[in-house]
Structures are given as C-alpha cells and as structure tokens.
Amino acid sequence: MSSSSQATSSKSGVTRSISITSGKGGVGKSTMVANLAAALSRSGRRVLMLDGDLGMANLDIMFGRRAQQTIHQVLFDGARIEEVIMNVAPNLDLIPGGSGIYELQRLPPALRQGILDQVSDLPDDYDFLLIDTAPGIDDNVLYLNAAANEIMVVVTPDPSSLTDAYSLIKVLNQRHRENKFSILCNMVRDDREAMAVFQRLSEVADRFLCVSLTYRGFVPMDSGLNKATKLQQLALDFNPRLPASISIQQIAKKLSGFENVQEVKGGIQFFWQQLVGVA
Ligand SMILES: Nc1ncnc2c1ncn2[C@@H]1O[C@H](COP(=O)(O)OP(=O)(O)OP(=O)(O)O)[C@@H](O)[C@H]1O
Ligand SMILES: [Mg+2]
Image 1 (tube, rainbow, N blue to C red):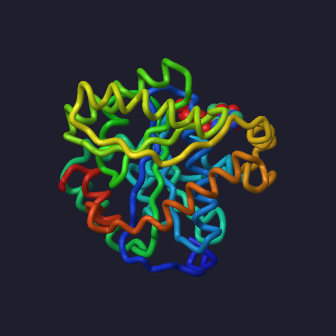
Image 2 (image 1 turned 90 degrees about the vertical axis):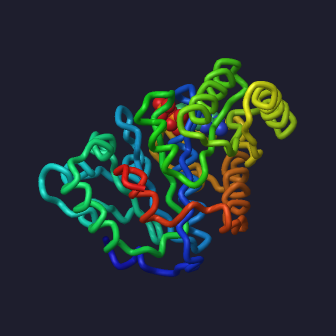
C-alpha cells in the first residue's frame, strides 16, 4: 500500500461496511461503488473497496488500473493481504476480489485463522468498506451481503429490477435474518420517479415481509455517465457537474454525515470474521 493512502483520515473509529448489490444485473452497482468511493475519499474519508463480483470484476479498470494479485493469491500462493490491496487514489484502496472471495467461506480452520491474523494487522482506520457484489441470489452473493453492516440494494424503474430486488430482500431476510436494507434508485428520470420506485418496492415488502427499507437517494439516467464509462473514466472526473455526478456526491455526503454507530455490527475485523465464518 502506498503511503499516499495514509493521507488524511477522519478517524471515526469504526469502519462502516456497505454492500452494494442487486437482484438484476446491469443496474449500476459497480458504477455506484466506484463513484461513491471516489466522492467519499475526496471528502477526506478513508475508503476500502472490495471487488466481490467474480464474473465481472472491473473496479480496478474503472480506476485505470489492472490488478496483478487478488485474494486468490493470498489463499493459494502465499501472498499477504496487504500486498494485494491496491492504492488507487488518495484515501482510496481496493481489494481485487477474484475467485478467492468465495473460497473464504470454505477454508480449513488453520488457513482461516491465518487470514484473520493478517486482517488484524491491516490498518483499521478505514471509514468505509464498500463491497461490489455480483447480481442475484446466489449463495456467494448472499453471504457477502450478510457480512456487511448495511445492504444497499440498487434498483431501477425496470419492473424486473424491482421483482428481482424483492426476491433478493426476501431470501436475505429468510435465510440470513437480515431485516434492514437501504435502497438506491438508479437510472430514474427524476426524484419523483425515484420515490415512486421506492414506494412500489416498500409496499410489497411491507405486505409480505417483516423488513424495513430506507431510501438512500437516487441517481438519474444520464448519458454523460455512459460516455464516461466508455472512456473508462469516473463520472465525477469526466464532469462533476453531470446530473449523475451531482446526485452521487449528494448520496456520499449523506453517507458521510450518517454516523449511526449504534447500528454498526462491528468494524472491519468483524466483517472478515463473518466472511470466513467464525463470527
Ligand atoms: N445513472 C446512469 N445513467 C446512465 N447509465 C448508467 C447509469 N448507471 C449505470 N449506467 C451504465 O449502465 C451500465 C451498467 O453499469 P454497471 O456495470 O455499473 O452495472 P452493474 O450493476 O455493476 O452490472 P453487473 O450486474 O453486470 O455487475 C454501464 O454501462 C454504466 O455506464
Ligand atoms: Mg458490476
């Protein structure tokens, strides 16, 4: 890890882990993780991203980098976690996930303890851990979500995105007893459409499940963001005045100000304990 990543830290004391997930693919999870992480780190927060999307691991590319090593090398080739963590911008680090992420839950006890020992040596001054997941209700996605403090479900106005979000919430509730979720509405026309999407999901959830959904904000459909993606740039860098960039910065600001530490299940160590199945 480069020393620039140690720059300013707000030192709030507890790392908030947030998984950014969805039932349906292509709703903008990786885009939200990369841009929210960039916005948070630029406001002085220390942020760690975990790329938990096996098939489409692409956070490194979004930051113009290519991961040389992943968790896989930690598990099978004797690399140490701190060697795998990449500093991609000031205050912003990335753990490239690769296939090793899902092996974590099936480790023999000795290896498991080795990972936990390494994690306890990691700097514990991250304010946020943002986890990018694959879409869907695969066991691997569920367990990454269940390890996080906050499960942020990304939905779009597409009806199948809503039904798939509902299915994801339902199985996380039934199999992992998760009962709190936050909702980010992406690719909407405006805040009215975002609220309508949120309400549609809340109504069904209220009727059939015992869960509470919190509205985290919206990001509008923005062709500028698409252009940025094609140029492999973050929307925030491409043009901070894009409607999508402005919304993302607002959500980051809300997350930063949201110091509800009572609800935090534990710091970064706790997250890793959940991952390797000892908590
Ligand atoms: N608000 C938006 N406006 C316009 N385009 C968007 C918006 N959000 C995301 N996109 C575009 O949608 C596409 C999918 O985004 P992204 O890869 O972030 O989705 P994902 O949910 O991570 O997908 P997957 O499920 O495959 O991992 C990208 O081309 C991205 O630029
Ligand atoms: Mg993705």
